[in-house]
Length: 234
Image (cartoon, rainbow, N blue to C red; front, side, top):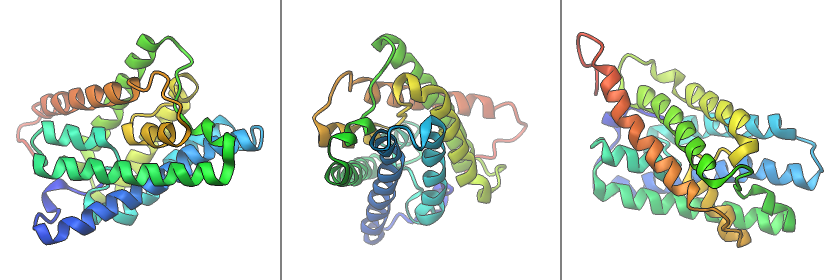
């Protein structure tokens, strides 16, 4: 996750930035939800803790892999929240989201090809009533976005820790929320496996929850930031 103010804005670099988002989201979905599918394939070898660690580890690696190119969003809700917070022009928001969804779908299709019916385990499905699942996705996404806001928009947070901080937030959310909702926090992560398997049960939760939670996080972090004498926002 890179400071937003140092990302290139020239039109001629938009292509590489979109490619970076697509590639990063591809590996996030291949390895994160992919571990959940392998868990089903092997009848529980990685286990829920292994699945959570896989999400955290792949995100840390992907942030350092392409964060300096695209900002390492890999998540339509993150990109939308940056647009709402006016930290990213809307003309860039929609291409980012399309690139992320493309990467997610390609990864999910590969999982379906490799693992067959076991790929259905990569789909996010609530094990609690939908209203409660929606609320949990909002809260988990809010927490994740607060961490992202700190590392991506606040100069007081050391840049090198960005990937680790975000990866730990995702792993922690997955450990708590994974058994209840799948701890998506990411519409692309849910959309790819849903499209690849045709399983759309309660899919709206995984769009509405993350987008609302992350939009609220942008407002909340800006308010919290006012507690300092000077605004260190970049």
